Length: 113
View 1 (cartoon, one colour):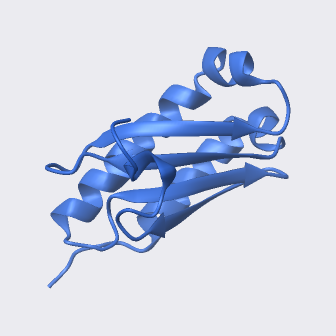
View 2: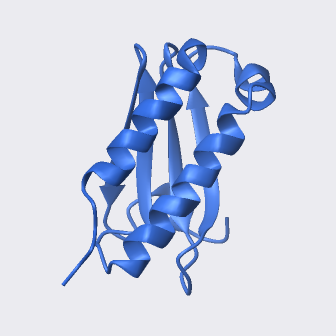
């Protein structure tokens, strides 16, 4: 029996959006991928509608989101919840959402990233 909490990711993303409301009002997305052989984040690719990448980094948003993604991947691995290796975090208009994708779906899974 899985102990996966469906609200785990949603609640933490909502909290991060509230903490960094000035960042998530801008439209953007983060494609992410986990290691093939373990449940750890291996790479991200950021796309932002506005040139705020310095602000994303300096505010701590980037680090907080990366830490959350790593925790989400580990949690899904512990609970055997699929998919668990790749996805996209989208933000804009003050919201943050996550979409998990089948393995091999993102450009990060094509070649060595």
